[in-house]
Length: 312
Image 1 (tube, rainbow, N blue to C red):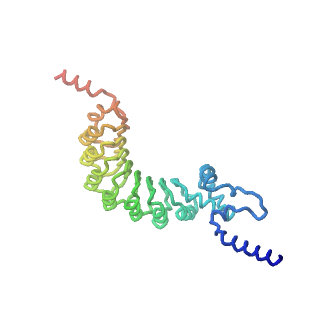
Image 2: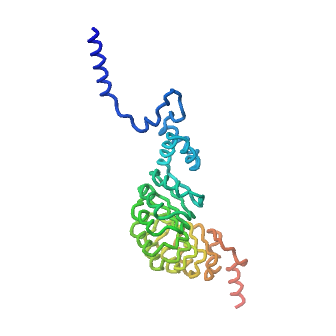
Image 3: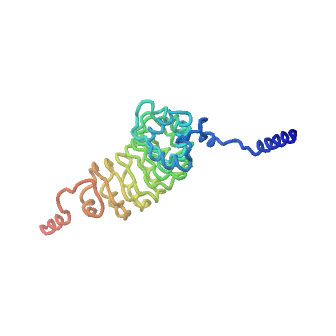
């Protein structure tokens, strides 16, 4: 009997070992301490902690939590992996580039990327992040990122098929070649900003705007190559346009603005300060229909024209 009992236990142990599966990393991370006490990390990460708790934590909070323990580190990185938005615009704190390397490695589901005015940002830091998130990115803000080059635009232009918003204001490294590549690969943009980009030619812009029939917000402020011909093309092809910034575009005149506003019935705002060739002759009939950033000259143009007619 004793021999049979030992053989039976041996058989059960073998059967039990066959049924035991290798625990997943998530199961190992969520396992209880040896003393049996429950911890925060015993709560389901995917169903509770990450979707409900992490939404209340800032990036700084996540990195502080990450430094508490090995389990906290893994939890914070699991939360980063599920981040849909990364907001670092204007963040130039010390050692931020080291934290960014962690985010570039962990973040895999980003849809919105805001890195405006990040002076520390380089191609070497940005490219890994773009390569890990190129399938989902729909909005990218690189305004005033002066230390990257057109090389960083390559994965954005070619591989981000969901891209809808692209902001490149004051990026002097933006060239005609990069805009030509955008013309070939991106036609679904709804918001585009190339203010203060002086290296782009008029012909390049004319060709580019022929593809952007979904554009609603456009900023071309202080871009020297913006002419009446460019505005005519925008009016012809960007009929859904709602807001346009032309501040400082000294080459445009009443002719181009009239062609643009006549062809874009959904236009809501027009910014034309420091455009000396744009006069009240074309702006006066638009006032009341859309917002114009430049104040009226203080007289009623139709009434003035009527008085001049009577004098003649």
